[in-house]
View (cartoon, rainbow, N blue to C red):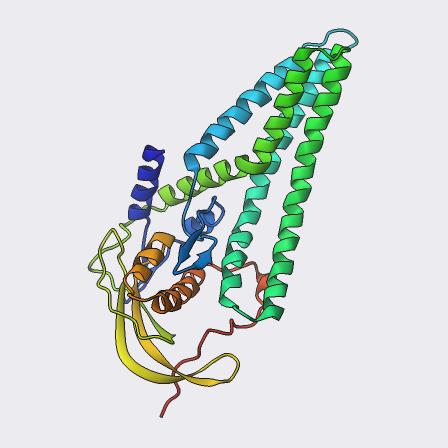
Length: 333
């Protein structure tokens, strides 16, 4: 676990930053897209719950589960090839091999649905009390989950076919048959719960490694500057390269802004400097610099919006309204 966590940190520190002609920072989008598909660690900021976006958890555990499933699948295929007579051994080998390909193939295919699930589960937070938009997001997420459930059903169906042939091939229900049936079901559960995350983490490592062209933070490169407007005045924070390479620079002035609902309010203006992208750990670190809970929550929501700006849902999902809390530029005098 320690070695995998250290490897993740090394990759994050060496993820590339792409530059424009003015030497501003862009994010490594291929790596971030791959990162969205990995297993997430939920976290909270001042009592506000976040499902996790740019973090990866339980990578070592998923590797262990994958190896266990691989062992069961290989052993199961060999056992299915044991029955003799009337070509049953050949049929068993074919069933085992096809089942092996289907189990791992479906788990691999399902990981690509995780990107939109990660995106929308976080986007949902930005809509706060906008129940209509939240219901729309929930509908999208339920549709994606239905596709995953269909894949899970096929995995269970494959396990059922293996168990049926195991019973027919050996002809008697003895302890070895019960043991293998239990293992087939266990492998199916592992594929449903863990295998896709093993593949997702592997693709993330490959993607991040292939994009290593520069360090994540370089003092020469200019940060990407964003203006945010919060209900509470924020406290400034200087960047800490490698640990948290972003900064917060409040102007301590009230400006009038127009909410997406058309309501005009006064908010505090703050400049946030971002080098490349914001990890979940960065978000937590930046929010921890604020002394009171209201400030932490204000900043967390704004930083989440910036995080989501580094990715985007599929084109068919772009008809959602602007989140109610988002603001337009200040009103000119």
